[in-house]
Image 1 (cartoon, rainbow, N blue to C red):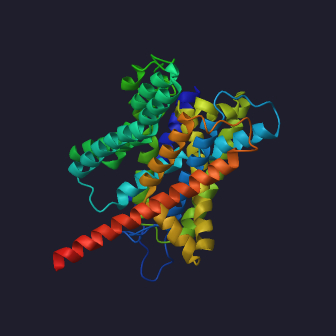
Image 2 (image 1 turned 90 degrees about the vertical axis):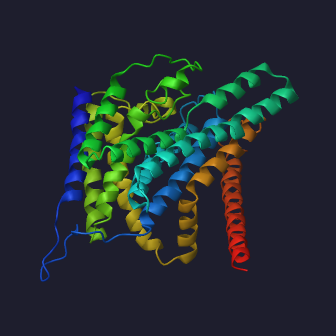
Length: 403
């Protein structure tokens, strides 16, 4: 019953987005300003979306450090349990789902949306995902295997090579949209396809729940275990919602009214659905803690989408407060532009420190916060100088060509 209820809720959200994206609400010349214009009025970078991407990557660095440093640790009830829950919440519903919604929005704002371009980018992202696996897992675990002669590290090097992550998922998303655009399917059919895959993925039971390496092949599509955290069927809904949201955002003439209503709708939807879950005896922690976040289903998706609506509304009003702070705007724009590089760099740093046994913590005192802050700052610094070097080489090449 809960499956069908939440499915109808998600369908209502998708249909609402589709309706808004295709509704002509242009105001007459002498009439009041409408929220949605008849044409595109919001081209270029959207500051609130850049903030969403920048904050989501910070949350993901935080939760990745938390996951790697506290492996196998069960906190006793107390302050540390609350800290762990907070980290898993901001690194869960406010992390990967927001990251993927922003990715869907970015696909709308992309200058080249041809099927061939999307397909090429999808294949490139999948390749990049395996390159990252080698750089953050296979190589460091093999190096420390040779240093420590620990057989478990040898097996982990193979496991890290084959595991799936956001980059492989993102590649599948671009391939999905390439196929949809090649078939010239409408946005409504794309939404229905995403919902159908979500329902299928919610029903199908994992065939390999115990981290078997053979699970990674079916794990591209259906959740199996912690080696397959982002399967296409149950996570596709987030970039599709972002894609439909982006179609609307292009035409939003009054952002303040739009985000005010989005925020209010999110509060009502989240409050109502949370009350329903509690009345059925659900533990809200089961929606996002540990591996529960990765094994998505329609219940979790509807709850997280309602939180995403609240978060995006809040970020818009935060963006208004930050809009005159030029250093902050430049930092946010830089992080948004280089989001993939930041994601890759932080995982390489975490991977090497984890493989060497340098990131194990007994609690949240001592090494945890210095480790997180150091990795976050070092990641941004490395990506900044890498981007600067890339720009310098490009300018030098152009100058040589002109001379």
